[in-house]
Length: 158
Image: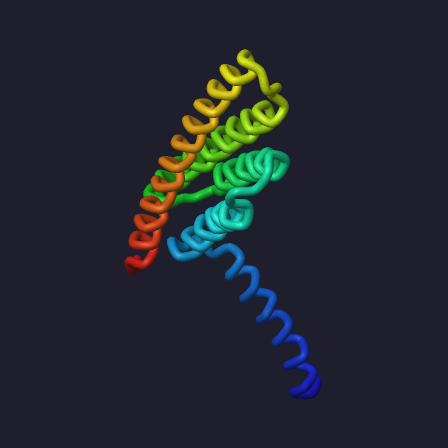
């Protein structure tokens, strides 16, 4: 067997072993990357769809619920990352529910007739939208604080 034929067997085998070990890496850094990637998916959805129409808001609410489930399904061994995971699931679930409420209320407001009863209904709908958006704003602020905590924790050496 020539030297080159040995290398043609050793190199692919070594690369396969390296890739296998790398994919099994469940270090703090690896877990942090997985959490941050999932959270960034949700954050980018919010940034992209900020201030859009009813249909888009309802779709955004559904997408945020998917993000919450995606984060929830991550398997973290690090107890601190598990805590962050739980808190992010709560934040994205809250965002989803409140954006959904606001979107539905906005849709109802657009269908309200211009009458005295319609005016009362419109005011009630406006109050629902304001309450939902206020709750969503609070959740978004919690997300920002939480992201800072995650970044601080994940930047610490193991």
